[in-house]
Length: 163
Image (tube, rainbow, N blue to C red; front, side, top):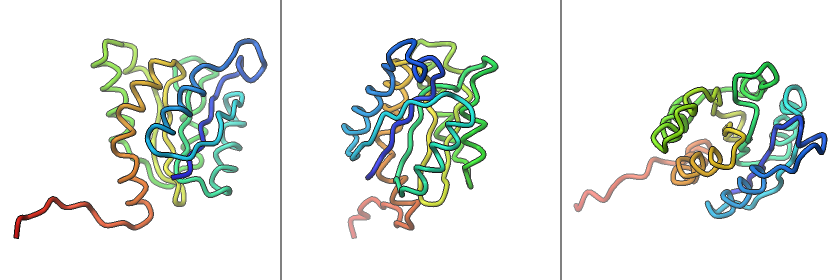
């Protein structure tokens, strides 16, 4: 699975501080069995949409973003992602928020991240914190291979019926 990690952060893109969630995301994607490019650090807003469209053109199987999912006026990653998606997968975003809340982070329910499919690429938005990336990848990693297989027309895995 070819993956791209994208960090959406105005301040990290401007060099105000070092991106910490992107490198963690890239490492966790590698641990999930992906060949990873990035993290690509871009300002939030239109540059996120451009990076997603470039990733689609490059044929990535999965693109995971970190950052830009909050409530501030500059948090626009979900809106930029929706411009690219063809089909949403609401269960992923719901599970990500629920896992964060269950991990003792009440503000996890405020994340507006989305997930879905564009062409044959799975796109998932994670929060910008390292904790949000860690918790989010704990949810995403176990279903990543199956999701990519399904997007590419794979059959459902069926338990052995014993017959």
